[in-house]
Length: 132
Ligand SMILES: CC(C)(COP(=O)(O)OP(=O)(O)OC[C@H]1O[C@@H](n2cnc3c(N)ncnc32)[C@H](O)[C@@H]1OP(=O)(O)O)[C@@H](O)C(=O)NCCC(=O)NCCS
Image (cartoon, rainbow, N blue to C red; front, side):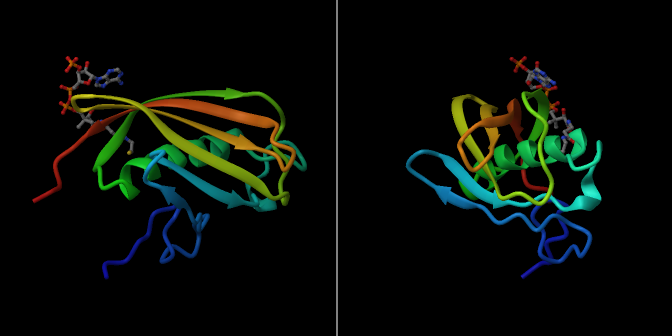
């Protein structure tokens, strides 16, 4: 197996987030439990917005990847609703809402254990050919 050094999900990247997703093929969606390490803080006790963006982007990318679709992010729109605490078990969800030719429209959310949405995103992805 080739090494997976993806910063978000790669088991072969010692500096990465090591996110582990579960795929639902019927709903074209993914789920992932995540605890954000204190080293990714912005304000004390809370996650940096860039890391939150990474999580939300990855949740959408995984819907494509685990569904066998090779695509890249071309547009990412994030809404930060509440401060995201570090070291708390959170739930990350991603799903595809629409496909139109090469264009894939997805959404993702980061929720606390009570189901409150802390941050959410919509994304546009474009399919790409595998590199030869
Ligand atoms: C994805 C990529 C290869 C697309 O290039 P391309 O194949 O030449 O695609 P085009 O620019 O012709 O765009 C195809 C369609 O998507 C649309 N599109 C492309 N980028 C878009 C954007 N940011 N927002 C909205 N629409 C976009 C185009 O308008 C076009 O629509 P149309 O077919 O209705 O006219 C190129 O944009 C790219 O490599 N981007 C960087 C991706 C990346 O690094 N993402 C982060 C890591 S995953």
